[in-house]
Image 1 (cartoon, rainbow, N blue to C red):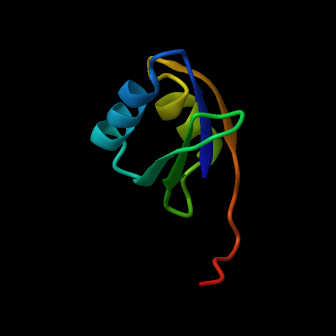
Image 2 (cartoon, helix red, strand yellow):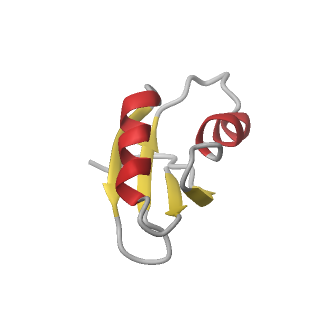
Image 3 (tube, rainbow, N blue to C red):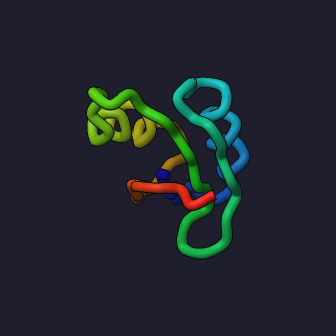
Length: 76
């Protein structure tokens, strides 16, 4: 998961860009709290998540900050 903080007035633009351009994205949620969006993505085992976030996510216009969370196991 990647939590995303957006520039004011850019949340919907950022969400639409992610859905349209990042094929690794499974879901994007609008959330309350310190961040504006939460993005669920799936990368191949050998893909460098740090490089992906740096090159593909943090360069999206309207993104101010990101915070990455790694999920280990889903209990459902």
